[in-house]
Image (cartoon, rainbow over all chains, first blue to last red; front, side):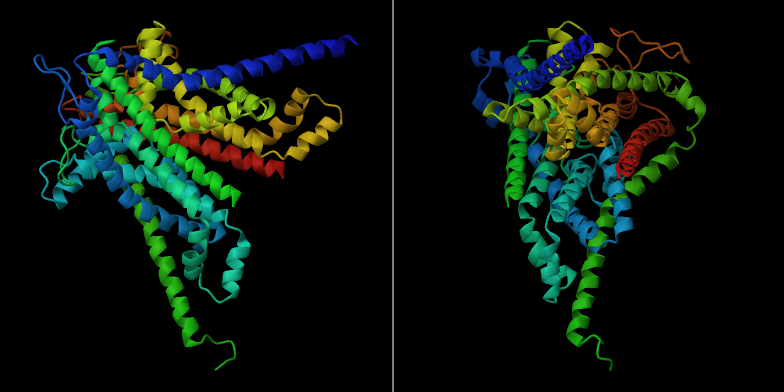
Amino acid sequence: MKGRRWRKLRETAIESLIRVCGISATIFVVGIFLFVCREALPLWNNDGFHITEFLFSEQWYPTSDITKRYGVLAMIAGTFGVTLLAMVMAVPLGMGAAIYISEFCAPRPREILKVLVELLAAIPSVVWGFAGLTIISRLIVRFTNADVGVNLLNGAVLLALMSVPIIVSLAEDAFKAVPDSYREAALALGATRWQVTWRVLLPAARNGLIAAVLLGFGRAIGETMAVLMATGHAINIPGSVLDPVRTLTANIAAELGEAPERSTHYQVLFLTGVLLFLITFLVNLSAGLMIRRERRQ
Amino acid sequence: MSRFAATPLVQTKLRQQAAAGFVFLGMLACILLPLVAILGDLLWKAAPSLSWDFLTSAPTHGMREGGVWPAFIGTLYLVTLSLAVAAPIGVLAAVYLTEYARDTWYNRAVNMAVLNLAGVPSIVHALFGLGAFVYGAQFGFSILSASLTLAIMTMPVIIASTRQALLSVPHSFREACWNLGASRWQTIQVIVLPNAISGILTGIILQVSRAAGETAPIMFTGAVFYKAIQPGTLFPYALDEQCMALSMHLYTLSTQTPGVADSIPNATAVLLVALVFLVNSVAIGVRTMLRSRGR
């Protein structure tokens, strides 16, 4: 009898611990957004700062003595320039690789290839940045007429390599989720594997594939160290792929160390964080909706 | 001509199929070859510096010579501390969300928020860590702030992967256990956790390698360019001190240290990649081992 009461007590203790952990973890996790917003909030009452200037001006002089300007348009352009160029490279390659792994490959090499792709995803971003700085920049200087190798193209190549594993593994999941009966029906009609892929799998797995691309995009847009080291730090709207640029993430990383606590500069960097947060949240949210819609089918 | 010989139409189709397979294989090669080339290049250039001494000695001459011991130990500190915070809380939180929380709009919103936070850029976590731990909680630039920042960064991913593992245990298992009179916690303890453990562990180990490689979140919260410690000591840092870290060390060496020999940053990169690959291989090993045991 005593043993049972003791066990009951212990169980209540464990369950309340679980409850506390669950609630505190969610508070913490949701609190990040509120906290980053709160740090940026004093900007609304700041006369030297206007939200329209922040979003639509390309002048960024946060430490100037006479005219401070906080416009991040050039960084927004840099972020999307690098990310979109990366996607142009990563999406076709990732899709093709996923199709090969899931439809053309024998089962045993398939497992090895999946492990390799997983390893590709595990390489830390600072190592990618280092590779961009030392290897890719030299290749760019040799094969194009660019003066410096750290530019938009370099960052885009790195981001493509970094986001491709996500695209491959999620696209592979999406292909795997298509029922085998679809493939068998098409094969029975005399379709080749290529025709099965093109006419049956791609339409059937469409939502999952869109989700894969979106999540790869989200990974690329939030990447910091690689673009900090390999895109060349110039704050201007890029005119060609060989121009140096600066992204939103790299801008925070480059200047956060110099911004005094609670200065306008500090608060503007937090506002940039809010902007990044919203962009990635939107991207992830739409990917989640795509995955859910696929499950429902 | 045999009855089963391919007609010209079939032959064309087979050629098409082979060509398609070849093109897709080429695309895969475009992804994997740079990986091989980059790793090969790192290893090749790092070779002159790679030795046991490189790992166990401290950097000298303004980091232009010597090894990486303080950075290596610093990374171990940060990873261990952050996981000690994030893993238990994350797993228990996932248990709460999957096994206890009712399916209300509020809990669904929390779930969605957690999933989405797994994709938030690491630099945003750096902002949060700087504002909340360094300035807000007055922990200062310290190992404590940096590891808490890493913990906050890894926790949503641990929650998400644990939830996935728990959800993959069929509901009928739980019902069978309840029917025997087991309580909710007994069911979790005896049925749910043992069945989900391979997924949970894999998720946690993958976050170990992510925490070891991240630079942005620790750059502003506790990692420094250089810190002298007693070489060879295992516990050189105190919690309220700053520390070096491998990822930060690589960043510093390659962008802010002029005149450093080529082999030293390369060797640091090789060490970092080796560490991450080792941890990932452990994750893959654990997964295959526990899966084959389950069958």
